[in-house]
Image (cartoon, rainbow, N blue to C red; front, side, top):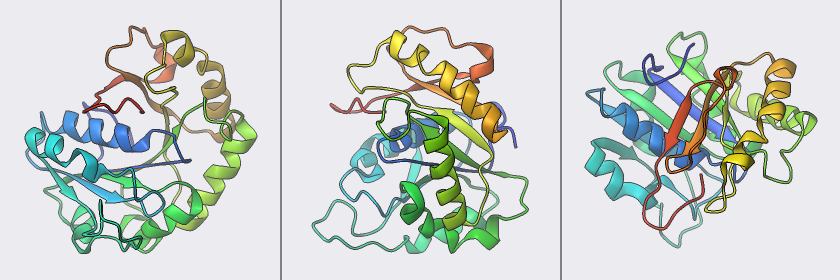
Length: 227
């Protein structure tokens, strides 16, 4: 299903390798949708990284009108995670536009696998693979293909598109993002998946080629600059 701000899926799931930037993309996407959608929720299902969660931006999300669904253990010293009990609503409530921030790789995708039957065969859901070409283990198509297969197996769902989230945090330049375009084209062709968007920090001047999907401006909060 096409997935952009003009025609968003009712349920959008962002998944990817550690450090791909999926959390910041998910937060920014939820905030953008809240400008035009009456009810938007962001569900944190990241069981891999308990120290960089959507809960870190709870105030920003609330101000934007986004409901945050997360584990009661988020931002505590308890290293334990279960999907939040409210998570079922993002799959079952047809009046809710929902975004899920999924944990990295196959371990994180297990949290989604338990809900796979509620998503399979639906035409209003998108599972997007977030790619950061600057990360050491995601710089070539073969490595990304292996990660894709691991996540799909654990989640019991296929990816429907790609998100280019190439960045080096505060050190990101237009040239760094542009250098990722050849890899994204290679990945798009190898996986037969469309590029849903290219996420670019909002202060970076860069014209994104049409075949890289629409440019999506990522907002930063506090002192966080990792997308």
